[in-house]
Image 1 (cartoon, rainbow, N blue to C red):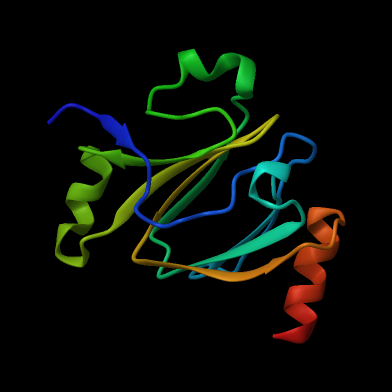
Image 2: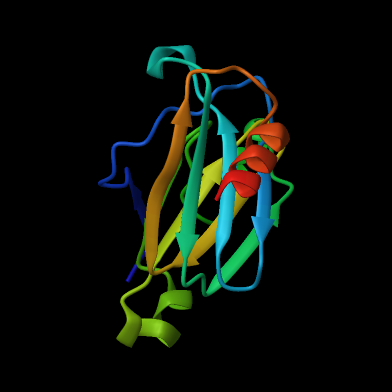
Length: 136
């Protein structure tokens, strides 16, 4: 099967172009805090990916996306369809996403994802992530 990409079914707040994200990965769960674009109301969002099978931060920035070996959208979420990487975990029916920011592209293969929090308060992603972790 050839690789293709599509927008995830979840209604996710749009990624702002001002900041790169903050991440916490414990080997099973991934927390991702990012700035929300003004078109989605601004502020911060925290996503929680659970049962993470693979996670990779790639240095491909928005100017190099056409060179990426996987489907990716500038400042967006792309669900990757047809990846051989998913075959190993087929019994778990994983999902595989690329997530693009200014200076990094994240790749995450996971079973579950939820929007853990959204706030209209503007702050740095690392501060939003720290606050979320302290209050969870």
